Length: 339
Image 1 (tube, rainbow, N blue to C red):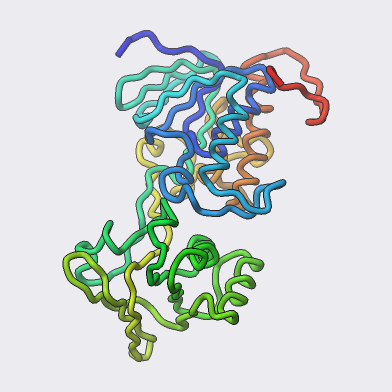
Image 2 (cartoon, rainbow, N blue to C red; image 1 turned 45 degrees about the horizontal axis):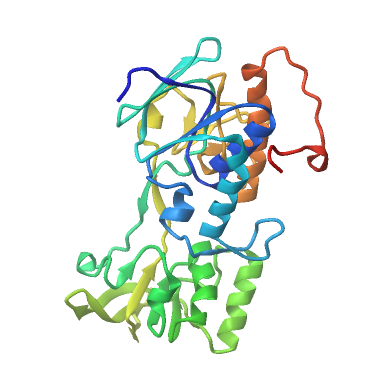
């Protein structure tokens, strides 16, 4: 690995949807980007955890699969020729807005940037596993924490456990291919978008989804990693046996800032605190956008992250191009190179 750092205007740490859109916004403001990510692919969680998951809240797209969104964002950023350094986590971030920032990855890649945008999602992540005896024997075979290909579940009996957006979104999507879909949740109210919850209850009325409420996971039946049934119980101990081929457990992701916690930035638990007007962190010249950023009233939506990326890049422009007057133009009047 060369000791000569790759020089750029903006280092974007995180190649998920928000990081990719930040590259586009930087390009529109005449700033070059290097994109770094621990994963060996663009797309972040969307690509690694649920490439076929349908997303419903992207403006202009009533429904778009996560991987399709990633591909369109890569295409959108392409005219500005970003440099990608993927497959190795950023371990070191030092410097200031006056002298620039020195960045190094675990693989030894070095980048010198005038400003930094952290779009690292939830940092290092892993699934929250349900406390079920013998769970490990089924993981990756018939117990899953993500769905990469819906087709893998065609004709199968599926138990979905959880009450958040991931559980509800897959409960809306999988009946199109699965033989049976059962949703286990501990209470009638779900933590999903109201419209998604309404659609879920409509599918239940139509007999396309069975709502197993209020129950919680209790035990698994099967052999050799192959599931035959999921045992669920109420808080009162009433048990039910659900015959199933697969269990999809969606209890969220455990977050860990990892090396980011040692970079001297103010943070609130597993989030970086920022100025909501500029998305700047406690260190001038370093910005945080997307799920990892925290400020009062924060909404953890992809579209919120897109807005934050635009705001951060407009703020960073004052560092990259100091003294230059920037006249705002409406999106409809700005041209993209090659368009």
